[in-house]
Length: 494
Ligand code: CS2
Image (cartoon, rainbow, N blue to C red; front, side):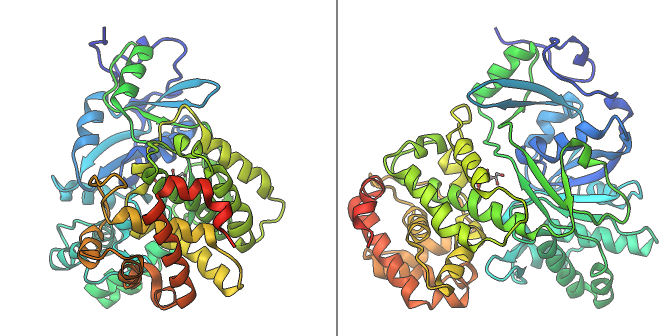
């Protein structure tokens, strides 16, 4: 029977002994961080790091903001923001109740309440996990897409913004007017030099509103970070299993793996939590870590997701078990990605790659290929295309990476190998469908995709060698299917 009582501050004390709970009184926590994009990733990553250090300084509680739907607030508000983090792999399970998210707001319902929080002088950090598309940027260049519908909206209605960029700039403008120093911006999304990208789009948008505001925005601290933890979407089965262990209902627990990593540039003029005590690593320049993670982990993930989905694998672990997949991913990491990485003194790259394979194999995480396949047009530039660019410049092979890109093209057209419709989620899905409509040959399809210069950049869009390799890979996927291509790949490679 499922429990009737709900997790909350009141019921916290009745949790079974085995469940770890906040080592502080959640009622005594005040807000120091406004987080835009309160999804599962934030709750399994930054919110846990913060939870660990709150006993030392309870002034760093988090106000979590949803920029779109009310779902998270509706689940967490009746629980006083408390939720369970379930950490699991093939070996075991650990449950911990997190108390660092002390308020949840829904931006479209009340943008003014979000702005009020951002203006509060106690708010010293505004962090973000709004996914790649949330930056309203051109993925190939990292600059603001000035024609983005949300940007056009926010330019016209600066006091009622929709986008993260619009909220940040309006809050900075009001803080500046009332003499409150600017908060530190902290991007926690999977973008190369995420702090720089954020600063660039914020500064440009501020400039479009008012040149002086642009000058002010250019002075705001925006350290880059590398974030890592695999966090699949929570399922109903997870909810039921967690309620059984808690003997309480939790409307939105989060499930993740034991591994977690956070590398952060230490530039916080108004201070920060002592996240290093929770395992974060502070460095001067995060870019080498970020390139490594995006190219090795996320590049492999996207390749696994597109090829795996097409070959009928529902999860990453299933995809890893497809004949030929493990060899493909290992070869991609060792032979094609690793030679392009900047060197990191003292870093054990082979051990990092081995750990990645183990993480992809984690049988306890049902990480759906479909989930990772989302928003490919925003992800591919930093995950696969940058590496391909470097390999082409070095006159080196990139057959596996190219197969990953071709698999995206095959997937993004929206029909699977059995002729069924794929639920493609991508801001460019409509454009891709229109561009490729009626085409049935690999050459025409590749040319249509390469016309997306905001994805491929002017250089790769016009690269003839890249084009012919893509045509070759896509024709094989179209004629043989992903499963056969994977299983027979070795023979077909020259
Ligand atoms: C994944 C990432 O959904 C995706 O695109 O590749 O969310 C991945 O799980 C994380 O970056 C791991 O840190």
